[in-house]
Image (cartoon, rainbow, N blue to C red; front, side):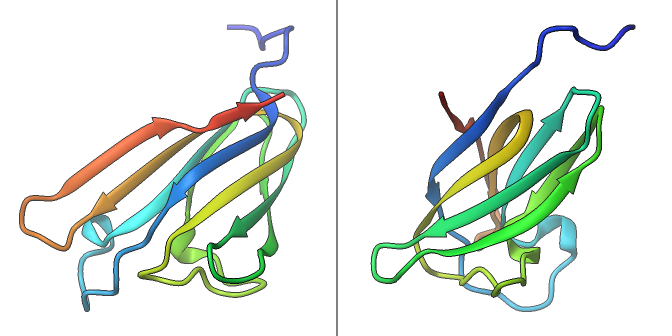
Length: 128
């Protein structure tokens, strides 16, 4: 199938809700509590992303920078972000993702603090 001729996605996405539960000790990575931004780049150019986190009680942190190759997807775990600093656990935050090419962003959270895992997923807000 040929690549899309009309760009798919937006340059700016907002995830107004973010929270990583407190670390609950060693656990298989697949089942550890986490936040994820699933980024889809359908375009012909690599997407250069800048991610900024906003908090209720302190100044924003960022940008975190990453590349999503052309015609690829990336499932970015916020737990894995370290530069400019690790994303705090047990703290509410929001995020803004800016891309130099159009991308699509979906937000997912796995909360594994209880035996019955809780998984939620929603589309990020596509800013104009």
